[in-house]
Amino acid sequence: MNAPFQPAAQPNAQTLTTGQVLQQLSSMLQTLGPVTGTETLPLLDALDRILAQDVLCPVNVPPHDNSAMDGYAFDGALLARPPCAQELQLRVVGTALAGRPWQGRLQAGDCIKIMTGAVMPEGLDTVVPHEQVRIVDDEHIRFAAARLQAGDNRRLCGEDLRQGAVALARGQRLTPAALGLLASLGLVQVNVRRRLRVAYFSTGDEILAPGASPREGAIYDSNRFSLQGLLRRMGAHVLDLGVVADEPAALEERLREASALADVILTSGGISAGEADHTRAMLQRLGPVQFWRIAMRPGRPLAVGLLQPRTPALLTEKNASSALPAGAGSSAKQSKSLVTSHPAVLLGLPGNPVAAMVSFLMFVRPALLQLMGSSEAAPVPLQVAAAEPLAKRPGRTEYQRGIVERGADGRTTVRTTGPQGSGVLSSMVSANAIIVLDDAQADVQPGEMVSVLLLDGLI
Image (cartoon, rainbow, N blue to C red; front, side, top):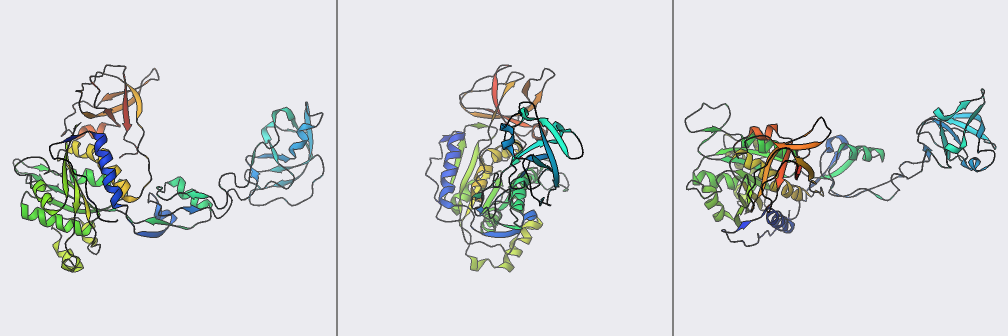
């Protein structure tokens, strides 16, 4: 990633719309640029990675004209000659198998039996499917010529990809289909961008690690697992930095460690206006950081900025390892050699579990894709009829957890999962979609169309 990165000045008191947040985030990250490191991987190891450069097609795909189905190949010009208004009779002189081209000489009125994928012999350009054929004797077939046109059931050389064309463009995520396409070109490896390194930690005196003994007033840390799960699904290299108590010195130290180890620092909690929210005050001392209030529900605060790492000479591989917290996961400890000298992007999320997940999906996910160098398009909302009344106050965007289902009448509708509080994490478990109610929208009546984002593909 390149520097410098300077967030556009925004008054702290300003409340932004969700659209303004996405626009400003994108503008900020554009100046920073995507990660620049690359690596070359075997195809199967490159699943879901981001392509670092265009892949040009070294061959035509397919490499030769071939049959699109099992049948009989013949010269399509015969279809234009009488008495083809009735049936055409042809003499079968051989068989072409996939991978075993037929070698021989053809005369007028000859055809060959051919299998799907087999090379079309020179002079033959049309295939009649075997189910349309009537066997006359051991050497002859007949079929209704009117059911075919010249060129039917033939795949042309280069029909899929022409030699020299861009087979896959830089920035594309390597899906299973993309890996198959690369393999069809005869490639065994591919150049991809390195994984984006994201350091994550939760904040708060009330946070307990799962497995710890319960204590009054404390809650177990769910964000550490849901957010890291989202990061891993995106293909990020996650550095687990555990939990940080509400102690300014500890918080500052953890932020400095994270800024030296990662491209992005993701936190949850500690960015509202509460007296114990030291993240907010600390970040403003460590770098150009903004605190946005967003007109949305659930969620509202979002911290965005840039943290300069400590001088690399002061953080060697040895003391980077010892500086990691005792609660840090093994992924962070294994990454002690990944000390960086470039600024780290800071994205601070609210602490309520649902607010943290929704804010991640709406803002962090597109930001990380941009930093990864991905060209992936934003998900397209679907229009679905509401199955029940939806309460909505104009002036903010609401993301309600929903269940899209098809009724016995075949109609697709969406209903909420029930209570929509920002701490009701079970609503994210039972949901298969997010109902997006925009700023101007008011209460929704049953039958009205609403926008939904299916969680399949987002999570």
